[in-house]
Length: 315
Image (cartoon, rainbow, N blue to C red; front, side, top):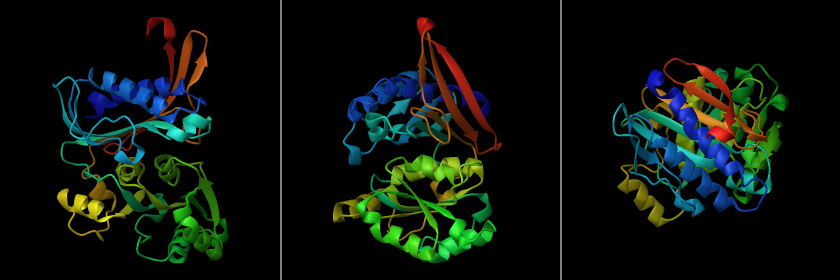
């Protein structure tokens, strides 16, 4: 699958990034999302594969969707599950901020968790701290475990948290433990990856974010040798029933990386829409559009950055 589809999947995220980047700073997040979604679908349908969307855009955003169960690809080639977030960071693009991505993950058919569209408690750590954190442990215990694993003082540990009212107690606990915090407004897929990606100086991700994004991030973490641990956080009886309908009987179940993405024949791709720590954003320059894409394989452990110049006159 890696040999057959890697560059094709990069084309998908590049197209989505370019289309959404035209809405940079215009305050219209749904228009940016719709542009990314349309571009992504159009390129997907040229790829030689039999794909089914198992993680699509969620009802949480009330935005245009590549819907769960949608078939993508030419109908010939590998049978794959597809997880998409055509624009991770719709508000980021609308406000012209940093770290928006177009994201796709694919795996062999049946290997991705069909995560319901609801919140998930998440912890993500890099390779050094795999197996050392526990989503049911206290914040302080997890910070101490990461500090020990990375041979740091707890005061030097950096935790990333989405800036949300629901995280007020979490933020307080991190500060009381003595660690530092990087607060982000959106984009917890990129934030999870940062814990395992060299040079980002982030050690752990805490907090509640979307469960579908948890599966996307888990594919990336498997490629990087890191770990993402999740536990669903349904807010209503309807969401509890949705979990059960999707085969998740135990709401307290802890999902580790290998539960979220089974096997190792999986590919993750992310193209920058706006500049960020992982990749540069789309740059419009005369007759050319420049993109940067991070694409990784869980099977080979290969990590590529692809810088591409797209000739506007020939596209």
